[in-house]
Length: 450
Image (cartoon, rainbow, N blue to C red):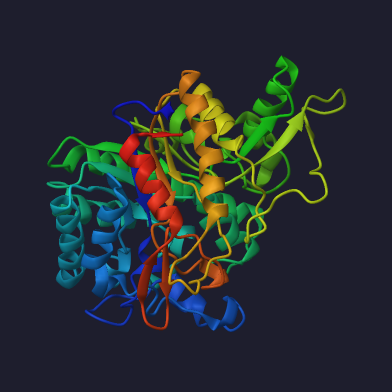
């Protein structure tokens, strides 16, 4: 059996907009995703988060599901506009009450809440005031963080500031495929990034200054993984260059986000690459971004093989015909859960938390009333074996959060894809634990893989 460290944390994850529903009740304000879902053609099938998994009303039963699975921790996010309907100022007590109930239900079930402050549901009213393009967004986010910390830090110790800034910036403000649906030039995307990273830093300062219990603070960026074709030193160096070098005029990168936050500066090759497109900033901005963190979170689903090249820093290898793909058409690459944590820790010298990992599979309720998802079990088993290998090789991995404990709204794909351990019938809201939920239950119970 491949045993994990005795204090290893096994968890599940979800996000507010994807599961809660209840968008028009109890004085919740609108988010950019509410507006985006109304934009014809932007979300598959015209799906919205209006009801989603109805977690707003079914949170108690959902916490029981998490307990049944055996997860020791639940990574949840808080909806900013549910707490502050206009994004700033007026507090919505009913929103506070909801998260009070969720957190208390988790603690009563011996499940530790890990709270993400921002998982993309940006307040619509603040978007109308410039959103992340407005430098005031840094202070807006800090003020929101202070409200959350004041209300919940007596029971919450583990915090994440931003989820996948690469996604909400590049997809939301570059390609326009995510909310708020903007297609900005690279200079404005860089401005948005600068403000988001400052917001992360300000929020971290607030947590450390205001928390009522000793906090553990991190974040949850995309882990953009590149791994070596062989374990020859030159191929490993090529993977290192591919993971942290800047190439192209896009923001699907580790270093442009991780370096300012952890190392206190933007990567030099990125500054050269973006040149005059960079917004003006002060050294003090970088000091705000660069706050001490307790862990480096990474959402890792796949990667890409590279090898050494005589003509370039690395060469991306083409996948073979018929390479395994998930329903999302994402490649199945278990090695990413070895090399991703290994190279991220090597660069940033922080404990690693896998804040998301999972797959979209072909799931339905079978004639026997069960949901058989052997591909998910095989996928998770392969990935966790590679994570175990990383730990054996000395990588300090503290926790693993499976995405997700429920099928849910998969952003612009609506309800087309299912990534949950639990099947959700969106018409009836009936939940059915899949075979993978019981498999994961056994993994957690034994703290290892057979």
